[in-house]
Length: 84
Image 1 (cartoon, rainbow, N blue to C red):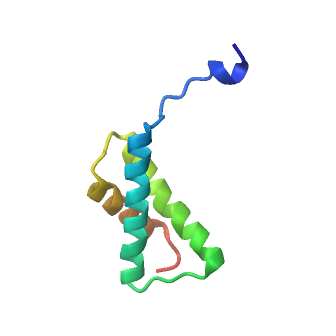
Image 2: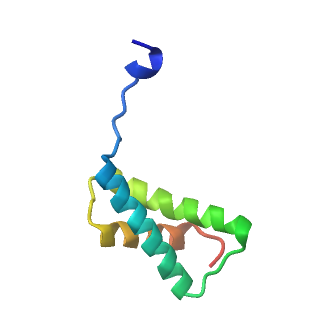
């Protein structure tokens, strides 16, 4: 067994959960766009990262509902972003 194989992964997600998270990310992005938030290309990466972190943190707590993951991402963005 390699060192890599022996590492524990306490916060892994199944492919189905990852797909749910990706859908929530897309929906969160659409919500921000509807609110008139249109960052430039460089800032877009940062905005998507903030949204993704909100989704991941919420999913790590066990949430699997796409609407709740989406709402958590938007709330995380609104609390973190200097681009408001």
